[in-house]
Length: 332
Figure 1 (cartoon, rainbow, N blue to C red):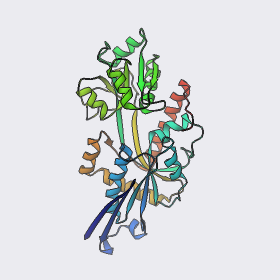
Figure 2: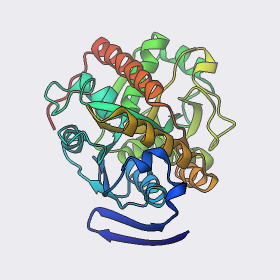
Figure 3: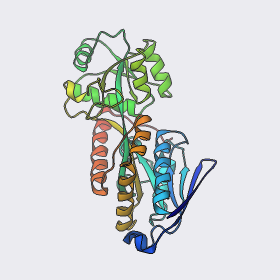
Figure 4: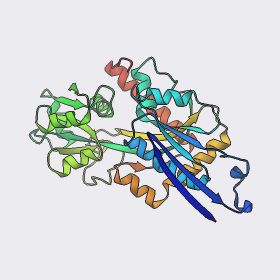
């Protein structure tokens, strides 16, 4: 087998071309049927360099090597994640345009905005989850609490303020679900981004914040903020000594930012299966898993059916939280 690989970066596009010389007898039935026979494009509805971009490029590189076809990562940021997600939804359902979808685009924004250029429940066919990221519940060190139970008790007798990276962001949604399940009421202080929100909590002007890995883990390890809990169902490998919210009196609490591959509705089932199997194979590779763990994510594949059920559950959960809190955002 002879393999040559060319990687070129053009603007916001990553082109990975792979040439494979291989005996016809070694071709799988899916390859023998002709898919893929031309380049595949993965749309990322965010700017280059972010988590979803790194995930897409990691998958694209390995997929190109395995498929013997070029894979292009195309960044289409704008309107939050709505622009690129809408472009993917309107693309041909032939397996050659995929979306690196996110929890914000597919589970949170549908309840926040009425004018999305796609239908989160109908525009896409799930392929596989790729990775998720936990948040950490961080408090300013001067706050006299050491656990979730302490915080809930304190909030019932004191007015607390929580920061976020903006209305509808993962830190905001984490806090809304937290106070809903805990039966407390805190005041939301939205900022224009995560760094500003964190700096206000470090300075003690705001009491607490939920923030993403790996930044949140760094704040805990440096002693700038106290980490009370991680938001996922299991402790995080990045901060294994910090317990989950669920284990501290709020069973069922589970919040992650997640990313996964989807295709436009109508994409042939055999292509969806082929892509799902390929994604699972990629995520099982030790070098890929370590790369994704190093950026704070927890790689995990799912079958199309399991991923679809997961998305539906997430969309239902966040719709309930958002509707109960009366949150809406204007078109972006």
